[in-house]
Image (tube, rainbow, N blue to C red; front, side, top):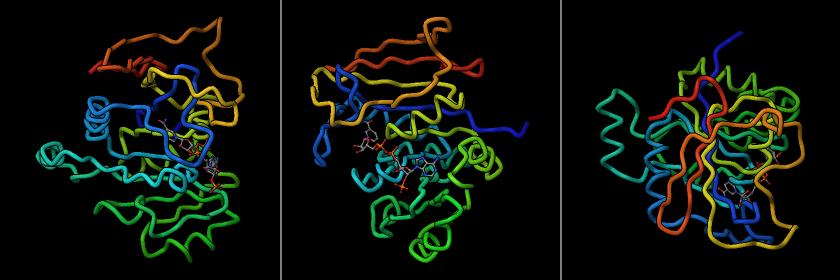
Length: 230
Ligand SMILES: NC(=O)c1ccc[n+]([C@@H]2O[C@H](COP(=O)([O-])OP(=O)(O)OC[C@H]3O[C@@H](n4cnc5c(N)ncnc54)[C@H](OP(=O)(O)O)[C@@H]3O)[C@@H](O)[C@H]2O)c1
C-alpha cells in the first residue's frame, strides 16, 4: 500500500457539537490563545486542507501568521508556509478567494473528474488542479499528497471533510476544541454527519490529552498507532 501523510484533524465546536451557526455569518468558537495554538500546529505541518464549502463560506487564509514560526520553518529547510489544499465536486470556487489570493505557497485543488476542465479554466492561473476521481477519493488524494512531499497534513474542516477522513480511517489524530456555549439550532452544521466510524462503544478512541486554554478546552485523541505525542 502506498504511503499517506500523518493526518491531524482540527476543529472547534460548541458544547452541543456544532461547527458554526445556522446563518452564513462566521461564528467565532475559538479564542486568541487557541488561535495562536492553531498557528503553531499549522507551522508544524506540510499542508493544510479544507473542503470547498469552507473556502466559500468562511473565506479563510490558512496561513502561518507568526513571522517567527515562518522563520523556524525556513531554518528547518521548509517553505515559510504550508501548502493549501481543497477538494470540490462542482468547481464553483472563486479565484479571488483568500485561499488562492493570499500566501506565496502552492495551492492544490483535488477536483472530481467531471469538473476538472471547468476547474482548470477558473483556477488554472492560481492553483494546480488535480483529477481526484469521481467523486474525489480521499485515500488516493492522501497518497498523492504524500507523493508530492506532504508528510504531515492538517485537516481544518468542515464537517463533510472531517466525516470522510474519519469514516475512511484516514485520521491519525483529532484536536477538538469545545467553546463554552450552545448553538441550539439543528440547521447548523455538526462536526460530523452520519456514517460508520471506526471508533464506537466497542472500539473507544484514546484520549491523549486534555488542555484548558482560557475559556475553551482542547481534547486531543489518538486515532491510530502512528499517533505521536509532541
Ligand atoms: N468550527 C470549525 O473549526 C470549522 C472549520 C471549518 C469549517 N467550519 C464550518 O463548516 C462549514 C462547512 O462544512 P461543510 O461540511 O458544509 O463543508 P466542507 O467539508 O467544508 O466542504 C464540503 C465540500 O467539499 C467538497 N467535497 C467534499 N468531499 C468531496 C469529495 N469526496 N469529492 C469532491 N468534492 C468533495 C464539495 O465541494 P463542492 O460543493 O464545491 O462540490 C463539498 O460541498 C462552514 O460553513 C464553516 O463555517 C467550521
